[in-house]
Image 1 (spheres, rainbow, N blue to C red):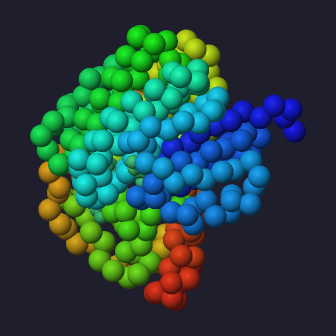
Image 2: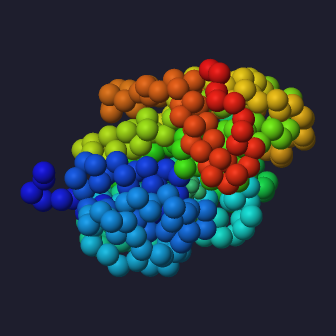
Image 3: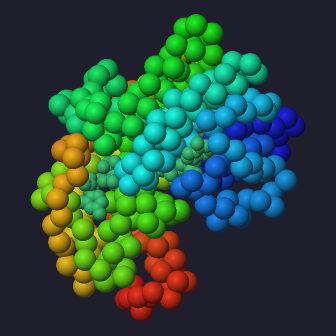
Length: 328
Ligand code: NAD
Ligand code: UDP
């Protein structure tokens, strides 16, 4: 047991990634303050942590200032699924930009280290493949994804300005598509959508022809990368890609999930949303060199665990739970 516990603030701590991060930090012996406005996060995600005396949950919106005393801040607050961040785009930009200013101001006042959960979306629809950190991106500043993409880009700018102007200790992680248990079943992201549709025997909604690619990282690997980045010395600041470099076409993902769930669902094609990136895959050379990090969970294993999570949820809801167990 540690004699002195680190006090760690996780904004967005009741969300998908945030709840796994809180759990990981508690396991490491830290004192965790989870701040969330529950826009896309759920109390269910952190219910199992509430009884822990080293965990505290606070309802708060990061677009308002926060006065707490901590040693480290992970700034994750922001809806991440296109459906959710496009629901109230002005609030999405406010959360990214004003939220970053408030959390950086807090870090500056109390001398805390702060890590930003940035995103591969800063590369937009990339023309460089795989994406390296020095690629400046191809974002449409006027499109429906811009509230998120430009908000996150501006947040990165703020992080580097607080470093240069105020010497705040920053870390910027560019997170690529991550999946796993506790994704919101209705958040519209591809892995949760396809698994829920397959388990319920509904049509699998493939946007476009499914040739667009993504590279999917299992949540445990991702959290390990974030925690390693936070633990580095002041010279390592990022931006740093954290993701799994195994690229897969969305159609192939759909077929794999149908196979693994034993579903009778059909694939139906729907129009591709505007500005949907055609190709995305991280170059993780920097994370490998500076963190000694790389993902370990294979897509098949991660999907199996995620399917099991959603299957239990569907069974609890009394839906099409009679579906046969996974075959793969
Ligand atoms: P999520 O939607 O599950 O979690 C976001 C959390 O932030 C939710 O709990 C939500 O209620 C909270 N939140 C939103 N606005 C807030 C506000 N104004 N004040 C306080 N809390 C607020 O999404 P996630 O997948 O867990 O993503 C977490 C972070 O990681 C986000 O910043 C996201 O941009 C980034 N990220 C995630 C992925 C991914 O694939 N999961 C990829 C790239 C970047
Ligand atoms: N997608 C799809 N069907 C769905 C949801 C998503 O074909 O029901 C596609 C989407 O068009 C994109 C990819 O899957 O090409 C990943 O989408 P997601 O919303 O998970 O994340 P993104 O990487 O686009 O932010």
